[in-house]
Length: 113
Length: 116
Image 1 (tube, rainbow over the protein chains, first blue to last red):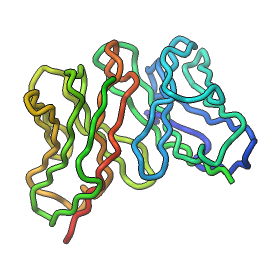
Image 2 (cartoon, helix red, strand yellow):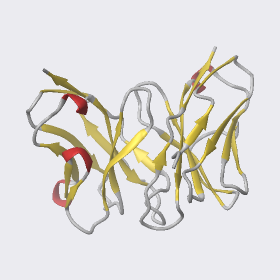
Image 3 (tube, one colour):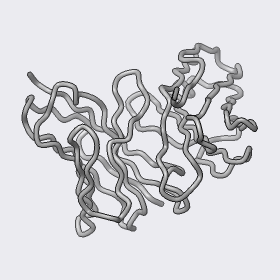
Image 4 (tube, rainbow over the protein chains, first blue to last red):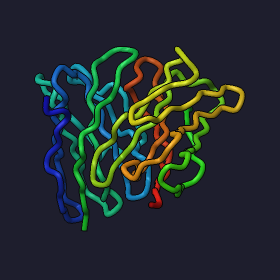
């Protein structure tokens, strides 16, 4: 079992550009959540996808959008990048239900210059 | 809204000493509380989870945490620190009542250093 895999591992973008990050959930999982972890801080919830729909969203602007595919993999898109978007982006997968565990990937380190 | 506060951004202990990392949650009783560990350049790994089944929760790597409603605390302990315990530790709460894996709200983290 490969666990949660994210790609790419590192990325450098210029202000104003757009970026797409990818996540493959752990085998058997149907729910994907995305988190942003700025340097020296705890992760912050961006949104969660289940059944190809955004089910919950944190306090992030509309520049952050996502998608979930029929195979449960997911993408995070960020438009009009700002320097402040530089962070580690973590994907977590889980199985829908009350008492479940979120498994985290190793993250994508995004640097905006 | 649910929240957690971690007391102390950096804790340093000697190898073999007691590890105590402090966490307080917001006054409303949360459905789920967690402790996660993050090693450098890695994702998060779940250490343990409180689900109201028992106030003393045992986790992996010898860690445990006790839920104390009267003190709104969920402190993490380990009797004897090992060098491999050096990492960043996050206390967290599930912000959604419908799933323990939904909208996890993290504290700011505590960096644990182990002195030889």
